Length: 149
Image 1 (cartoon, helix red, strand yellow):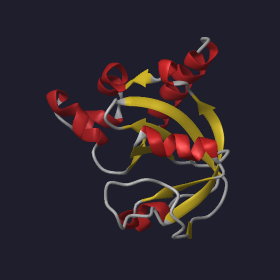
Image 2 (spheres, helix red, strand yellow):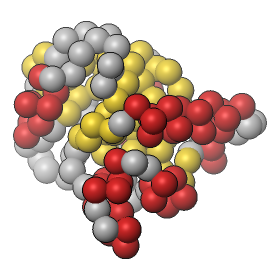
Image 3 (cartoon, one colour):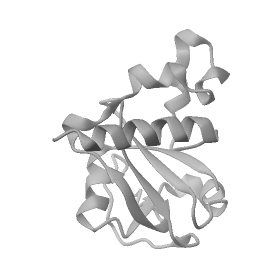
Image 4 (cartoon, helix red, strand yellow):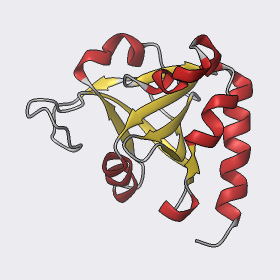
């Protein structure tokens, strides 16, 4: 099983939620990463601009190509064509989101960068993270989900 951080907007995570977390799409430039995803892999949603983790989903299909406009992008022609079917594991309300400024510097994955530049770990669209980082985030999300929104 592989654990992925998906870097994207809160709006696109909420679009997936409104659809019942039936699928998620990735940028046209990410075919090679998405083609390596497998059923059972987990996606952690990192929400840009607000620097928070908002949810976790599990991949339930092989990847496929679809150009139906579902997700929003600042690039007019970007339609997030590389997609996988997913199911929701945990989705937090905005007031429950996990602050990456508190969690990020403690992650093993982030140690590839100088401590003062840990935020570079969250640039780009997709990142594989170690099992221990996933388990820590999953536990924190489970705890946050128990707190009334």
